[in-house]
Image 1 (cartoon, rainbow, N blue to C red):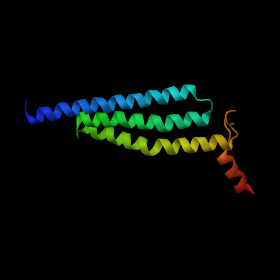
Image 2: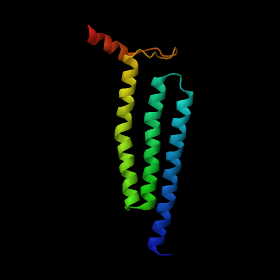
Image 3: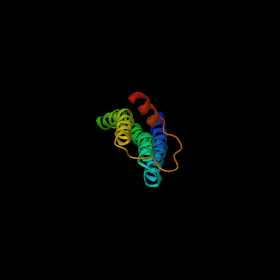
Image 4: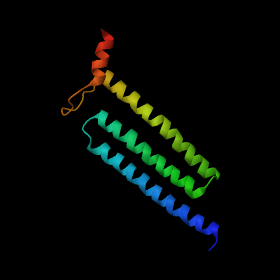
Length: 121
């Protein structure tokens, strides 16, 4: 077997491992979406874990396809998600808090609410 064949086999195995890790993170994000008690916890789970999972899947596509047009598109989508999803979740959370969506009863502290009240004074 040639060096190129061995390298290709190693890249395929690494791509599969990264894909599985990404899929586990996507699954955990989905599970958190169903299990978390309020909108703030759900957004935290889906924005952080789901973003890392989706980036892992896109990275796996890049590793498998190489720097072909599909690989470049995959990493572009992954980077776009990595940059925009947490910002979008923050803005949605902020809007929910400003519109009075309450925290779950298990929440013990509301730092953002305290900061908003200090700004109003």
